[in-house]
Image 1 (cartoon, rainbow, N blue to C red):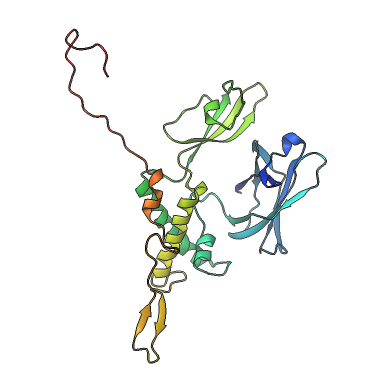
Image 2 (cartoon, rainbow, N blue to C red):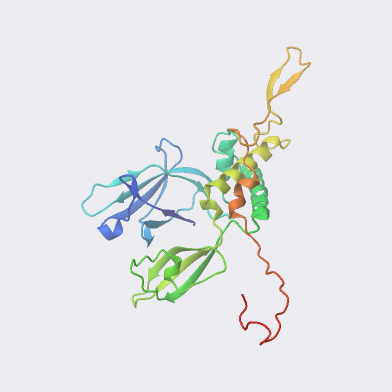
Length: 285
């Protein structure tokens, strides 16, 4: 089984139903965007932190599923049905995108076959490996759990801020979930590292380049080779479409578009040894 973290929206803003007397009751999976063919249901959701709720998903065949999430925003309010989400299952493969997302980029109808899925997964892993090599860091964070942590006192009482907890790491840190133990302490799940799946620029790069590699690979999923714009009547000449140049609409994103997340390496400069006191200051600049 896998899990899915859901953030309710009400009135165009994020909401947190449980403290207001509401609840997130169910998530229903359907096999098409019209949401008429029922597949399975999960719920109720467990509250992870303010505004975040976790569903334990049922075991279903791999593929894209369209969902309906039912929740009550507050006590006495009318139930809401959110139909804005679709899920590409299974989750938790350590990839920032899915075979279904790449298939849609290639204009391939869903569902895809098992062979197509395997080829697309390979293309995704290759594109993701290029991103990891360029950034100099993984794009999948590590889940670290610490038990019996007592938060630092803060005026705003924001337990979602990593600075609220006695935990540090030499990397990016996010609070994934926290659970009260009843004695004033908490069990806390931290995400340590860069979360590429939550970064739209990284997801777009991996998706488009995985799709393009399969499109150009002989025998690849949705392979077309070079795009043909016209062929003469007798087949004596062929004209190919020119690809958009960098910066134009439709051009493939480049690795440079990810440069702001590239890990920087710092090396201290070698300084000459200072003369002993009293011939030099006792403090270094």
